[in-house]
Image: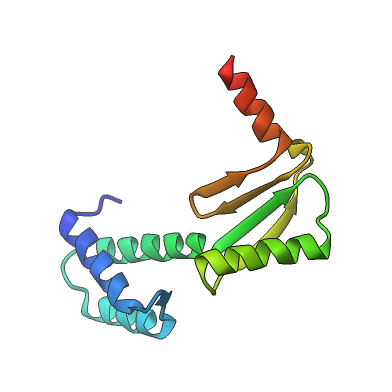
Length: 130
């Protein structure tokens, strides 16, 4: 679905209004969506699509995926979580995955940001250098 510039701007503005501080207020968001669906202003589908995209991006920015070649011990997992919470604030969710293709080390992904300390990442960088 193609979203007009006006609908995208309105959706982003409504999303910012639903945020209190640095967090998304779900009650405000529900109220805004309900009002949009009831009133059906011009381009309301585009506004809803933009709101959906903004919520998806916000959730991705608050979700951290930690990949390692083998199971991390509890202390290492807590250290990573504490470091991420101190740097990026509260409200983060963590998911720990085992990825044997990494060969060793860890890869941390938060939204679009990736911190790659894996052996595979280093080998890939070395291969690209040649």
